[in-house]
Amino acid sequence: MAGCGGAYDIKSLREIDTPSAGTPFTQALTREYRSLTLYKADYRNDWPNAYLFAAKGMAASRGEDVLPEDPDDWRLSQSHRAEFHQDREKLIAALATGRTEQPKAAAKAQAAFDCWIEQQEQGWQLADIATCHAEFATALAELGTRVP
Image 1 (cartoon, rainbow, N blue to C red):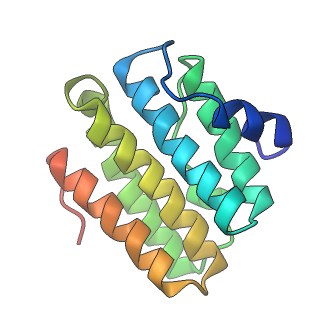
Image 2: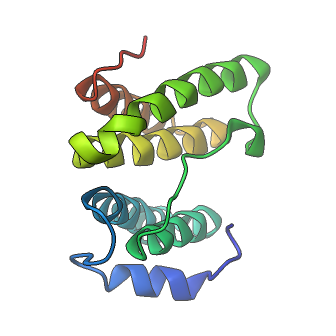
């Protein structure tokens, strides 16, 4: 997905202040991916991941279903891969009702999960890994699911 639009997607997503298409969930998800994209592009110069999150944000801005990242698409240790698979299953279950009942928390949980998996693959920005994981756990708890 990272090559779907590249710089065009980042520029387009940057211009979306208030998404108007889609559901309250996809609008909130657009905002979450916008924040993540701009952080990756403007503060980290992490262009491949900025492009990935921009493509997801643009899809959400069109009201499309955007799924959380699949752990099998990332270079993770076996123990981390197992943990991410478990937590992704919890997230998918929480999104089933959270998308309509708590769209902002659901969007935050999904974007934080994607942030966490991306940071864990890189493996060296320990504070960022911890922040993304904590945001994911907090949002998932708000949706009624606990993460150890």
